[in-house]
Image (cartoon, rainbow, N blue to C red):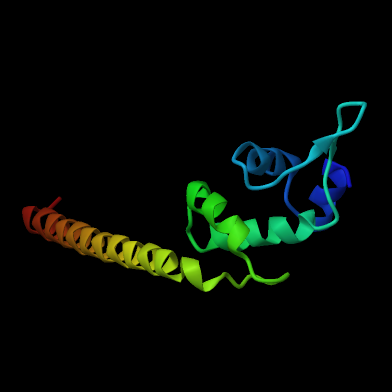
Length: 121
């Protein structure tokens, strides 16, 4: 299938499909006319990429995981589960740091609002 067909089939724009290919996540071959041609399983590959991106994984990690899918679904082989657990722990750490930053910013805003109200501004 051509890139426009893949874009319509997956709801992913052509520019993103080209990006996925540049990142080594999606492959195609070129026709004699220079057009990209994708295999019949490309829509499933794009769904997998989108699933992993939605999980917050960077393209570098996704590239490493792509060969590890089981069957046609989103499930991954057991050999990468520790890697996924590490990614989840990193995400939990970032969420905690953001929550702390949010609380600090909220405290600063509240204190500043009170100080302005006391000063009559």
